[in-house]
Length: 75
Image 1 (spheres, rainbow, N blue to C red):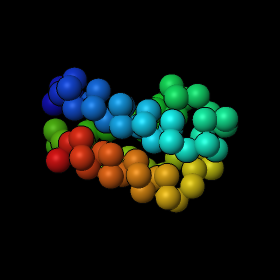
Image 2: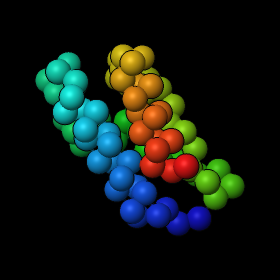
Image 3: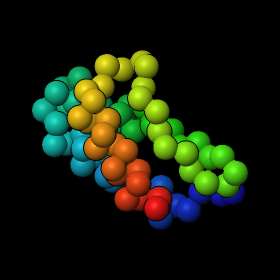
Image 4: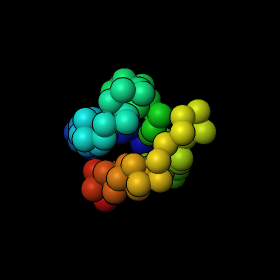
């Protein structure tokens, strides 16, 4: 399945908002690098929820915000 560009953009905008609201993230990682931590993967034509990144120590609270942003964008 080809990703719906509007939904992908919506997810990325929500990730940008999460990044801007968190003072730790703003100084530790760029917006682009933060978004890159959550590449979209598909299974049976549907997007799969992102996993907790292993390459960056992400706070559980922030990761939960990412999951909410994903759900709001793709459900």
